Length: 135
Image 1 (cartoon, rainbow, N blue to C red):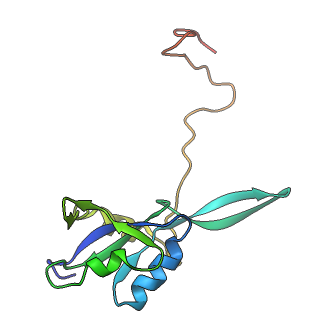
Image 2: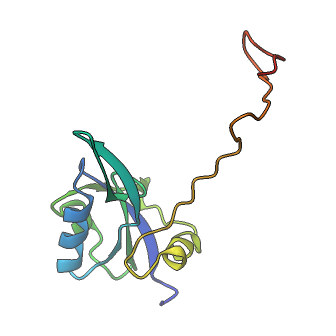
């Protein structure tokens, strides 16, 4: 990737992340919407659906010196670009690239639930009304 091109964050309208991504791509922008598999329960059914890793946010790659970056904010599905003052705030280098590297071939970011306790483990409460109690 060209060193002048950086990743920026776009804040989307509620539940419009995919619509915003499609509309940005149609305009020639490179957009990345990280997603993961989410377990959904509805009407006594459990299924797995794609869900945004960062709800209401997606990433846009561009060189703000040579790109019409203000067009991003007027894209259908986009609320605004995350800015610092009057300029878009770039994501630190390596953050989006790391998420892209972790994505599988279908574009999903694997999320491994880490459960620190098992049934029967002793735990100690460290704060609050039950501090120092063992359960």
